[in-house]
Amino acid sequence: ALQAHIDELAELGIPGPKNVPEFYPLSVDRLSQGSSIQVSGKDTSGEVEFFLICQESRIYVGLGSDQTDRAMESNSITLSKQICDKVLCSTLWPFEEVQQQWDRLRLRAWIEDEGSESLYQEGLLGEMIAPQDLFDNRFGGELPEGTVLFGGTMSVIGGVRPANAFRMELHDPLHDRSLEHAYRIEILEVPG
Image 1 (tube, helix red, strand yellow):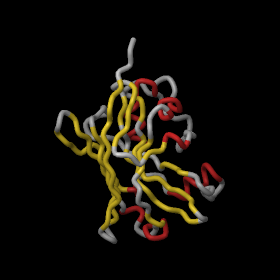
Image 2 (image 1 turned 90 degrees about the horizontal axis):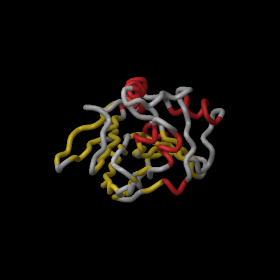
Image 3 (image 1 turned 90 degrees about the vertical axis):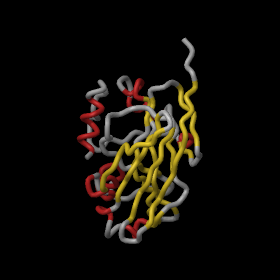
């Protein structure tokens, strides 16, 4: 799933990461739980991802979107991510509640363009890099207290493209529950 996403970005002239997984540090003021964000220019798009956070020595799972400036991404992946807010749902699940069925959890995202909503991404977490592998790769085995770690994304349906709105879901079939969040994207005109 991850390689397919890397390949589709390469088609847009965006270089692949030097390492997989690759980690891009972001400032905490880029995190938002809002229902709308503002972006500079028309070349941004969201990516549905799970995220993990350590709070009071417990790991929690959440749902987020890694909104990214695609025009800037061909020059600097880090800056392309830093320039856009990362939208997070406000509800979290304790990791131990979903750890056994992790591979069966399903991520989905829909985009709205010109008033019509369409499925944009869909895949199982079993197709992604496992949380412990992320912890081992970046932090030597344990997620530090207060850290928010996005887990990567899968390829999109119909090509990477901007949208007016982004809706996302992480579904747990064992407990028949979902984390959900949606947000609108307001494009700020860039003069010059």
